[in-house]
Length: 110
Image (cartoon, rainbow, N blue to C red; front, top):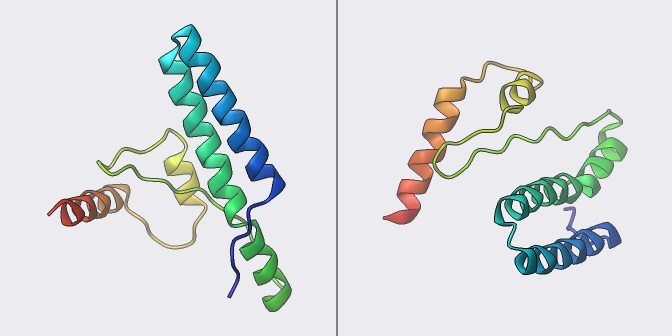
């Protein structure tokens, strides 16, 4: 089992995030802060699976690729979502994936 270790890159990004939030709150630029937070979260999510991809490559002797597929709690998707899903083998309907996310959110809220 591969355990996630906090890399120096993660620590750097989190520190950068905190500094940026502090500076933006002083300058009152809330929209830019939200965009930067989302970008940094996506980068951290991708880096989170770096150890797992290395482990799979070593054990199975295959090439691996991390494909970010993120669906919001209300079913919102990014502009690149359809492109990223199309890179995954198999038939995936975006509406079905969104429905699953919404039903999961409703289940948690009950």
